[in-house]
Length: 143
Length: 149
Image (spheres, rainbow over the protein chains, first blue to last red):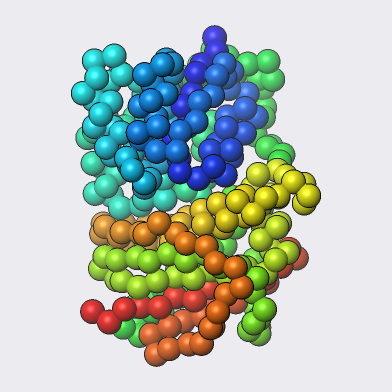
């Protein structure tokens, strides 16, 4: 089974890194959409279905908290799992994101293994060894 | 304030090592001397229980190595936008990591990072602390300034 992923981050570099890590982790990705803020993310979601959203918090125009609030209001989108990838470290703000429906966190800086682990935890990929064609021991990520 | 600055200095060193190792595959070590020919810098302003600003300065070879390592690009593929984006993300990660370690029970607000070529004055003030780091890939400097509260 392949998954559609939406990566939301105002840093193009960070979106590229996350996309690359997902690819090399063996996660079977069908389509990978990108957005520079929450507003752009909602525009993507208006046209395309995704299985998981990986979103930053601090972004211009519409931040990650506002995106979570908007998703929660939408009957169709409120069940799409959101993984927050952020430099934000305050427990209060992390709890706030969880209260808004975030399913997991990755703190920047992160290792490829962190991304693989959270995808496994949140959307269950890999439960049946379903990490795609190059499944197996893939912990030694080589950039 | 001196005590706070000393704590920030200690944690900043840990944070910058962690960010550079995990995200840029660069291993820093504290430098004995001060380098004054940095090519670019990324800055961020913070406020919360402690307020001020952080400047991270990069030699050109360091900046290029960071972009290459983070994005998997060759030297001739790097654009100015890649460099700016990458270094702004670096200062954001270093400071986010710093404040999480300083006190994760408190909320710190970070500004949108800014990017500057040819950094100006590296002069130090009473509430300013500077650290310089070396690696095989180039040099990094950090200047943290605390605001009076």
